Length: 145
Image 1 (tube, rainbow, N blue to C red):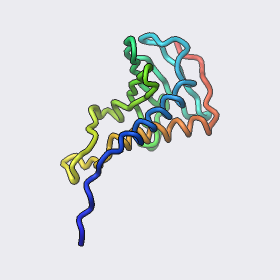
Image 2 (cartoon, rainbow, N blue to C red; image 1 turned 90 degrees about the vertical axis):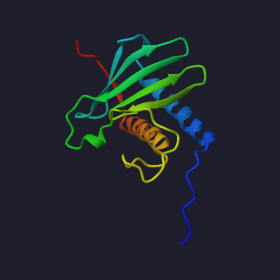
Image 3 (cartoon, rainbow, N blue to C red; image 1 turned 30 degrees about the horizontal axis):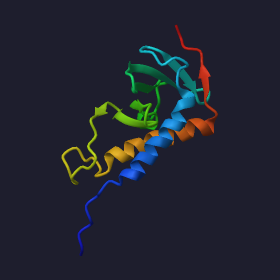
Image 4 (cartoon, rainbow, N blue to C red; image 1 turned 180 degrees about the vertical axis):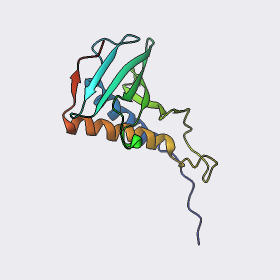
């Protein structure tokens, strides 16, 4: 039996994923990118998410995306912190469900049972969520006071 080859990240593929996430996230952003600005996104009558600007720097912005509804299955409504790189037009997940600091590659098995390509997978999860927003016909909602 031959050993499975060690996972090696493909940087062009990862950057392409981050570029697509940036392009799909742009229409959802608050009109003004200033710390504390919020945008509520409705996907259907029961699913709402809040995008909040956490940090604004000359070339980057950090957003938090959190579900506002109390889901029966929390894993189906992810919470993300996403860093936007405006000059490179990339969006990268920096936190997902409270876990921060993803490595490019994890040894497997590991004590936390993270996948070798965990960083790519959480960015892919953001991509899938953004695609679902588009398919559901997301709509900006008034931000509650």
